[in-house]
Amino acid sequence: MEENKVALVTGASRGIGRACALKLAENGYDVCVNYNSNSQKAEEVVAEIEKMGRKAIAVQADTSDLKAVQNMFREVTKTFRRIDVLVNNAGVVDDAYLLMINEDSLSKSLDINIKGYFHCAQAAALKMMKTGGKIVNISSVSSVLAVEGQGVYSATKGAVNSMTATLAKELAPRNITVNAVAPGFIETEMINAIPEDKREGYLKAVPSGRFGTAEEVAGVVAALCSDAFGYMTGQVLVLDGGLSL
Image (cartoon, rainbow, N blue to C red; front, side, top):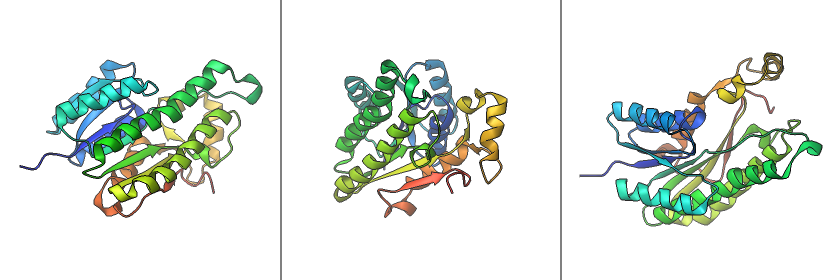
């Protein structure tokens, strides 16, 4: 009997990560729901996946901590015996203009948004070497569009785009694809926390006249994990309603 394919989604207790975990489960994957601090929300995602008839576990790990990531992957392979998809999604946004950036915030952003992606990609690649697999990195439209106050965030997401291309080239001979999705303004807790007047300003800048949804991002991620996109690797797909045009 063939085993179900397995996906690990980082930062999957809410927002885009949650939507990705649910969409992949809908497409037949068993899922590891990674979270850093909100175990209750992570277990809620697990329960939703189990209702679909798929298996799921919630595993706590700070992706900036290499040992924690290695332990997480050991837990996944212990439970599911394989891993076919990694969605690198866990990240932080701490906006500040250049002269207001502090060292702690800078270090945290670099550690989670860049080192965390490398930690997880490395651990996933080791598991996928013999079987092949898919790695999808969540980037941002800020990687290709200058947004005031997002110097640090845009730098980290630019790094994600560059690592996506390089890892794709390195891993292609092993039948591992590496792509990225760069969302624009998406209806999540982060957007909802922005003051109304600022939200309206952002909305006016989007040619489509609306913010995207986490489910729309998840749909693109799931497509990249399908056989239909098996020949695509090293690409960054911008999903922003025309914002960056």
